[in-house]
Length: 276
Length: 266
Image (cartoon, each protein chain N blue to C red):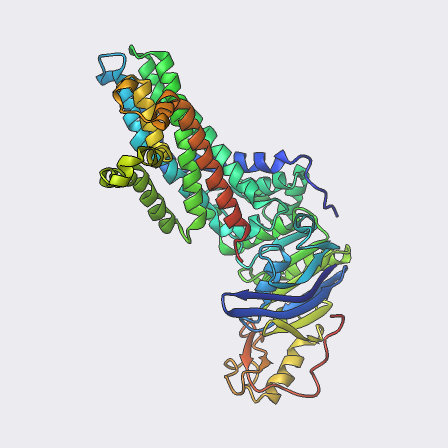
C-alpha cells in the first residue's frame, strides 16, 4: 500500500507539488499520468525516499517515509527514469552489488536476469550494452529484492515493443502476486487496459481519476472538446488558458502519446478522484 | 515477497568496499599513481647514497604527489557513479554508508599501493624504522586527502567542477596557507601573539606532516626554533599532533559530506 497525503515540494521558488494525495493498493497497478512538469517524477522521488517533502506525509507498506525512511525503503523497489550504471562494471557485478546491499541470496540474481532475458549477458560490461538492454537491467534491479511495493518512473522508454509488452506482463504478474505498483508514464495508449487505476496529475496535484481501460477514447473526447487536433496529427497547441487536455497520438503510426494544452474541458469525462 | 533487513549492518559497507576496490582497478588516476609511485620508489632507492636521503626524497613525493593523487582519486571515485545515485539512494541503506565504504576502500588501496613507493628504499641503506614511521604518516595524509577528494566530488555538480575545486583546495593547503602566514607574519598583533600564527600552520595537515617529517628525519633540531609554550608542545609531539589533526579533518570532511548527501535532491 502506498499512501500520500497533502504532499508538498518546492525547488527554490518553484512549487512543484501543491498538496498531492494518492493511494495505491496492493494487487493493483496504479498509473500516474500528466504533462511534463506536472510533478509525476517528483512524486516518485519523494515516495522512493530520494527527497524529503516540504509538507504532508507519505507511507510505504505502513512505514512512514519521514519517521522510518529505511523501513519504508526496505519495502520498496524503485526504477528511475533513466537507470544508469558504472560503464565498466558487468551486469552480474551491478546486480551482485545490489544483492549484497540488501543481503539477498544469489539465486534471486539469476532469476532477475532470466526474467529480463539477460542471462547470457551477465559478464558483459554495461558500456557495451544498448539503451534498451540497460533498461532491462534496471528492470532486473527492480525485481531483484522482491519487495511488496514497486515504483516505476517512465519505464520502458528505450524498450522495443516486444519488451514493453513483456514489461507489462511482468508487472501484471507481480500485481497478481499482491504487490502494489505505482508507475508514472507518458505512454498512455501503450498502457491502456494494463493498469487497474489511472490518476491524472496536474500542477502538483491529483486532478482526477481516469478510466484505465479506455484511455485513448477518454483523451480523444477531451481533445475534441478542447478543439485540439485530431488523433494521429501533430500535438495539440496552446489553445487556451493553460488548462490541460489530452491528445492521443498513440496510433500505431506514431507509437507514442503526448500531452497538449487546451481550454479545460467541463462536464462528462471529468470524474472526481476516488480513494484520495 | 520478502523485505527483510540485512543480516548485519556490515553487509552494505563491505558491498560498497568490494565494489569500490573492483572499480578502482579501472581508475586511470590510480593506474598513473601506481606507475609514478613505483618509479619514484625505485628512483629514491637508486639515486641516494646516504641512509637519510631516500626517506627525504620519499617525503617530498608524499607531500606533493601522494596528497594530490589521493585527492584526485577521491574526487574521481565520488563522481564515478553519479548517474546511479537515484538507484543507490533508493536502497534501504543510509547514504553515509556509501561514503564510509568508499573512504575505507580507498584508504585500504593506498595502504597497499604506497608499498610501491616505500619498498624499493628498503633495498638500499635506508633505516626501516624511519621508513615505517614515514609510511604510516603518508598513509594518514593520503586518507585525509581521500576524504577531501570525496567531499569535493560529492559537493560538486560534475566531475570537472569537483576536480577544479579539489585542486584549488590542494594548492591552498600546500602553498596558499604558507604564503598567507608569511604575509601576515610581520604584523604587530601576531608578533605579540605568535601562538595564533603557529596555530594557523598546525591546523593544516600538510604543514603538520611537513614539520613532523622534517623533525622526525632530524633535518631540523627542535631547539633551533624560537619557541612559545604552544610551539614547544607541538615540536615535542609533532607525530601525535599530525595524526590527531588529520583524523579531525577526516571526521569533519566525512561528516560534512554525509550531511550534504542526506539532503541530495532536496
